[in-house]
Amino acid sequence: MVCLTLCLAVGFGCSTAKRLENLESDVDGLLDAAQGELFPDKAPEEIRLVGSEPELPEDLVREIEAGEVKVDLRRALELAAHFNRSYATAKETLYASALSLRSAQHDWDWTPSANVASIFSVNQQPSYTTLQNTGRLGFSKRLAAGGRLAGSLAVSTIRYFSGDRSLSISSLAALTLSQPLLRGSSTAIAREGLTQAERNLIYALRRFVMTREDLQISVARRYYEVLNAEDALEIARASWNGFKTSQERSEAMADANRVNQFEVDQARQRVLTAETSVVSREEALQTAQDNLKLALAIPLEVKLVVERQDLDRLLNLELPRPPMTLDEAVELALSQRLDFATDQDEVEDAKRGLNVAEDNMRTKLDVTLSAEAASKAKNRLSSIRALSADYSAQVDLDLPFDRLDETIALKRAIIAYQQKLRNLEQSRDELVLQLRLAWQQLQTYEKNIAIQKNSVTLAERRVENTQLLFEGGRIEIRELLDSQDDLSSAKTALTSALVNHRICWLTLLYHLGNPGVDAESFWSKGLEM
Image 1 (cartoon, rainbow, N blue to C red):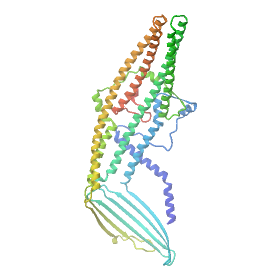
Image 2 (image 1 turned 180 degrees about the vertical axis):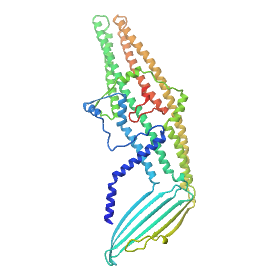
Image 3 (image 1 turned 45 degrees about the vertical axis):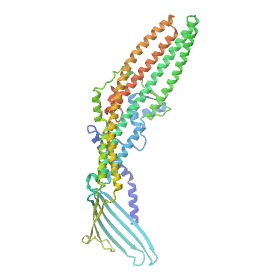
């Protein structure tokens, strides 16, 4: 018996890898089912966890080894989809919710059990030595009406090593049914833990999808911030070079007594100011690049090169506009936002919790039916004597004299339900407010873009005119320097407005609950508009 016990222990220990494989299969099935319920018109995506960090593609490895990585917006989003650390954590959180559901389901499965025990004992008075072995097989099953069915079959042997050295073998079969008749007898009450676990997985899946959408906006924002910083640096350097040219011209004209020395000093001062701006812009660019590298999980020491064409595309792209009114957008958002759907469902959860608390105020009346049949102790295994079985019935009545704890739990459930109702109202107001703000900002950025485009055109014309007037000695250099400074500011403001408009557009789609972010690439049609 001892050898059998060791063999069983080793055998079950060796099946750990198989158990993990089966668990992953079960979790995959739960995730597929949850996706089918939440997104019935879409094929379920594969959400699997790996034991180690995902391998980098060969082309990215070569670029990292060379010390320079080139990305456009599409590639940046793809890298984030595969390597972003926050996204990996979101997957693990979703996976943990599926594990919790599988654990809750297991409580309703037919649960087998097996146990083998051995006891070696030495008795001095009277003197004898024995080895007692007991093996037990059993099962248990929760019932829909709140009861539980359990059964077991046990075999016990006693070997005497002194005295008559006899062997005694006996067996015992037992079956027990426990069923509540009042409190806890409802199927809805009995299955509440499983129901909540199922709902929690849906909520986790919604949060996971929204996390992905939020990450798309975050990565796109960081990417465009790099483009914006590069463009601002380029404009600052061009402005610096322009001021240096104006300084050289003013110095030459001062040598010819055509301008005063204070005008030369003004030009020199403006060059120094522009140089300070260049240094500041370089620092801002480095910070923006580092933020993007963190989002893409790229080593900070590697140089990151972004494609200018994505910014040029914004300059030439027709600005997208919502194909609906604000009232229609609000109605669409309330019907499609996943987090608002969760807030609505949590009201139902609180209502069920209230029902459970009310049920706990009822009288407890449980009935337990048991049957046991044994074999006679002999030196060999004999059949169980079913006709000589023992039967018993037990009634457990708990009268509701002291229900303070249950009353407190009921009051808390009432408060929780009221809180969820207020939270739903608060969530609706916040959603509408966020949507209106994004809607207004989108219109504001659109107007700013039109204004800045006109401002750039006027500033360019003004620089040309003041240049000619200054060379003709008709204006002071300060006016020329101001015109160059205004052109630099207008170009920088135009780029910033374009980037803000793009991020605001993605944010608006997010608030509408319809960004349509692809799981593998983080791409969406909103980026093409």
